[in-house]
Length: 626
Image 1 (tube, rainbow, N blue to C red):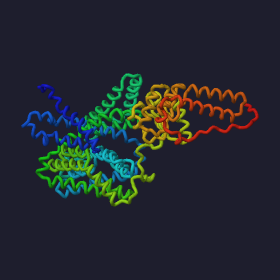
Image 2 (cartoon, helix red, strand yellow):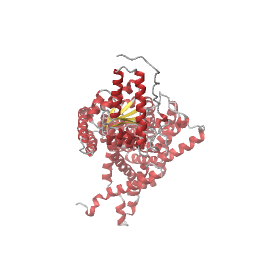
Image 3 (cartoon, rainbow, N blue to C red):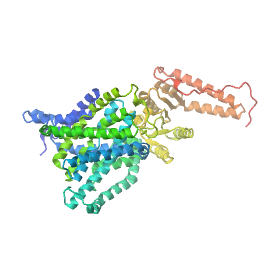
Image 4 (cartoon, rainbow, N blue to C red):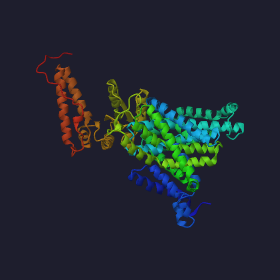
């Protein structure tokens, strides 16, 4: 029977209230909101306020009672996280970061998993169970570590780049680890030992059992390549006609859910299906728009995931055996940190960066719960020890911000005074997080393509953005890096690399839309070279008021081009013509700038741009013939 007075929505209200309080509070305190969600889960769970809910009825409205519902939403949150990770796993990015990702990162996973597995085997665990525990605890928390480093401003230094590369390697390894757990479970069930031993003779039967999963994965990839791009093009055309942005959001949600459910149907995890969908979309022109559309849902659902993790922290179990749980957490951090420090030094990182990287990556990560739960359900890992390992993993995640501060303090004492984080990595080891120094072109129609061609002709890298699916498709067909999206949205410009762009060129023919993009870009980057296409003189003056570096009015430029061609055809020397045109263009520019109301404080100085002096006027020249 349905609960009266809206009680069926109690858990949802409690979660939203916690999110509305926790995130702003922890952001203000400069603490990762993830830790806030973890703490909220402990407080709102059965070991927090739930203990007193029986004595005071009103407290039941401040607790989360349906943990099964939270777990279901948590699975969806992990799926969205893996989907976003898949969007970042383009072949170009992996190639640029291959040395750290496939070298340092993969070796860290293998050695840490092996070392942890050996420890559990010494404690009496069978090989299969120890392997599951080792693989799960070898991973670190992308969702916790990256925000903590971002808050400290460490992402662009050596520590941030090395940490990101290792975390990316771990994210790539999640799918193979889940498949490995499934294989181990099949082998253990095949020989009837319950995981105590693994018979090699069962390998063929295990692989045959996994054939439907492999076939389903292949079918997902095939259908994804055939269906995803046409589907998103259709949605983009509808959105371009003004039929609502919610269509794109709905399409993104549909892809994540359907990919996850399809993977579950063929015996794989929902997370793996979402990862595959993200990788497939990463190669399309809709990648940036998908990132922007899905990000709010990912953050909210990940909040559900971490609240679920906090709820699962059994304080009674910790209190019953604190030495084992806390010792396991401390031992895990120390063992992983030691391995990562040695490997980081071997890969050429400075002692300071190696120590910081090792400490923040020492704790366990969110995928430990996914892998350990899978191993426990499959009967590979001892439930009692696995639950203690999950408790230790949760406690270690709480320690990430503390370890980051400790690492900063230690490195300041042992490192030289100069800030080693400002040193760039060598080209051989530097993972490219975003194409620094590229020119961003907004609008890739006739004008935008011509600008892009000239940039390429002069060896200048560019990224283009357009809200017209046809223009995007034409640009992609020419091999250009063109993405679909609305450049008037700050999150879209940031996703396309505005923070590191050398210049922004707006070529759209809709004056109001040009104004929106200019206003947004100037607010994000006051120092940016910003050149915009204007409809006429009045529009150019308005753009200068909004802060453009240069405005190029169509009517004025057409007049100057007509005058130039006419004078040359009449036999006037080319030098005289060019000098006159440049002089007149500079005069128009001064007029437009003077007509711009109250723009002197908003427009950036032209001192940082390359000057464009007019050629000197020759004293005399013979008539030129054509």
